[in-house]
Length: 417
Ligand code: 1QQ
Image (cartoon, rainbow, N blue to C red; front, top):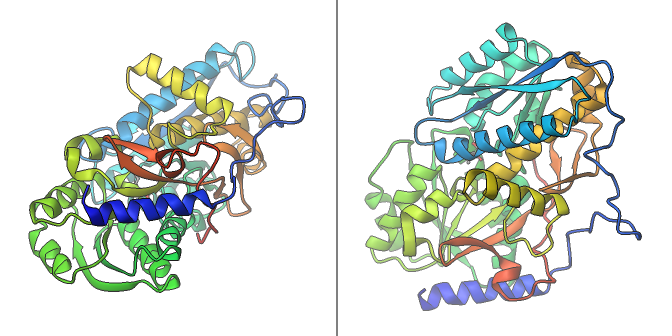
């Protein structure tokens, strides 16, 4: 790590030290979970033999770095739900997976949603993986009064599509401002170069959130560069940005482009910090960039190394690793939680009526989930704490842990979603 990188990292770590504990322990004085949550409602008695839900993920193509773990995690949750008879004795939860196939037009996601909602008549749908896919496909669910629960959509305005549209994924507006504020408040960051994909709802939205957070913190933007999905050569944009001598480079990109941007910036001799949006949150980005991503800073919704994990986070991580042979990532944790949330709505509704399930889902609060104590707000967006991370030794490490103080959690941020 360069001196400049180390300086920013140590400033961020020092800032995290001063932050209050944000993770409320989900236990009462007796050490019992406040809301049994997985057991929040009595076992249902009126459900049919088979209850079918759908899931639309990017299972093939470049976005499968997110969609693969999402599919595994949903399957894991569904298996657990069935093993524990969570929907009552004699009722089996079935999930139909559809592949949005990294189709940048969103058409595959629309087709998948239409099949699930209008032909398979599922009770609700989890996904799709990308915000751009959600903006294309969720109206199909909304028009059919069917719940669609995003588990990785982070663009601004997703749930504005309608009252059947939910998400358990923290929007960029709830994650990025805290990360930027930490750097700004400690004067480690006075100027940045900004780079974003200008053909994707999520990367555009992330850019807007970054831009606002930078302005709020009085950080100068030395230059702004754009690119498109599928681009391979970022040398021109990076050369321009590096030429403006920023304190850091801030990037809103999906994984494939993030990998190239990290690698090519180092090839061009840039050794300063890189701050990424949610697209960087995949371990695949780190494994494909190796040493080049050391010191990368990314805000997130879940981290395996959280020093104060919920009980269900620990249980989930163990189960995921045992079952799949891989360590879970944020996307797996959100997808697993999403499956349990939808199953809980079905359990609490004791019905497969789509509107009853929607109403039950909207009512979920203080749910003891791997993401922490989870609630939906009045706009069906998630309420739980974000976690700031830094890449060390090829892994996302919570800032609080990187600094060696296990009692401190990163900042809570105001949601601007
Ligand atoms: C979005 C994202 C992507 C990184 C999801 C995988 O946050 O499209 O909203």
